[in-house]
Image (cartoon, rainbow, N blue to C red; front, top):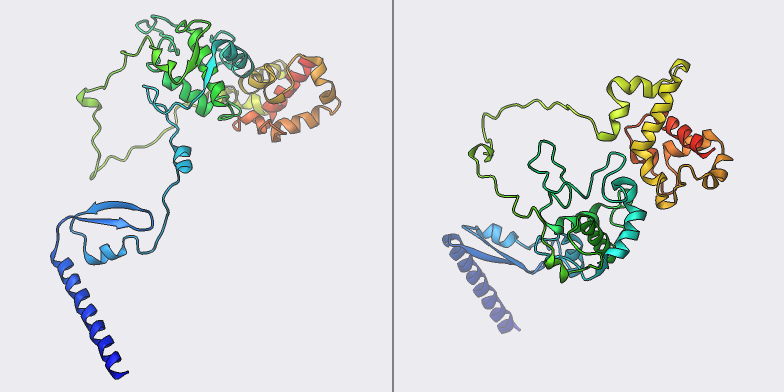
Length: 336
């Protein structure tokens, strides 16, 4: 037994000296060292990493290797050459039906723009004019931007609700509205390469010296930030019109009617002219019969606070309660 304990002690001392020798070697070696995080399975290089840093890397076992599904959830951008496009397809005919249901109330039936929302088509050869029309066909250099934007942000009230095939179809139809594809065109990941946007050579890297920003590291200027504009849909309810939107004397009844219509056009028309998300269409009396029975007060309360698919104030939080009340009154008048 004594001999066994003695041998174990000798082995333990030998291992201790070996560890000390390794530590001294690390202290004297300042060359680049590659360290592997055993938990995450990733490696990286550090210059002049001291022993404490070397031992600390990966020591606590934080994090994990991202799965393919997790990476795919972040990797959603579409490159100009089409890299990143998912499998799928959509043709112009299907896109037209989707566009009428989901897009026309804002962008017009033919991409001409409606209710203050952007034009999507037209403007050919207008970029050199004093007032150019910057549409998908006249201005955008890559079709990938169109697919990507529809996929991420449209329709306005329910972004990311479209299936990939629906995005392909809508993209194909908008391209058709700009005379960039034929009416029987089907857009796929493969046919994407056939699309050539008219303004593809209109963009270049600005190399003028006055646009090359340099980071300020010391003695930086203290810039005062001043808000000089308001959101587009707040135009009717700020500045000189703010009083009219919040107080409605009897003598200003005509102005109130105007506010109700203006509020409707800016914040309500997108859904209530197309029936998007089940919204009752303005002017369709049969769709308002049940709602009229609830009374104007309850309908106004629902419009201000939201109900079902309709967000509070139609998603326009800058609106005053009185402005929303005026919009409801306008819609009820149209329903009679």
